[in-house]
Length: 102
Image 1: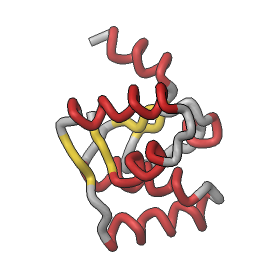
Image 2 (image 1 turned 90 degrees about the horizontal axis):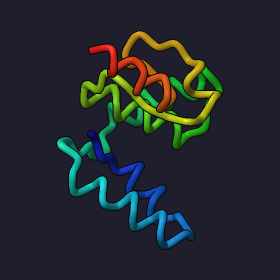
Image 3 (image 1 turned 90 degrees about the vertical axis):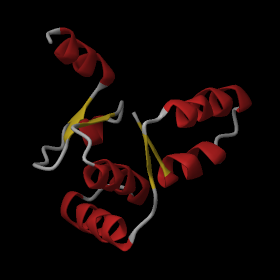
Image 4 (image 1 turned 30 degrees about the vertical axis):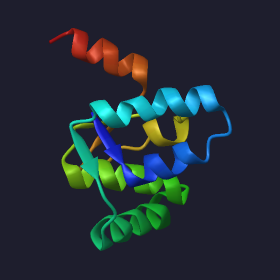
């Protein structure tokens, strides 16, 4: 599990205290913490241009790529329909199904 600076930023913007607190717990169990870098920002900018996705989404993907994640798990249909060479974007149910086979 990964925690990133963009996840922290978005979570801090969450108006729902219960959800914000529940998600913040993930930070404490994350094995990797991704910090901002020029390379991540540049990669995200390219994703935005090529795939016409939102800046925050591009940053989530870029963080995953730069820390070497195999998967980015999301419920955002626009994202999990992207096919990238650097990371597999997948919805939670498909991920569970896939890893149960191992």
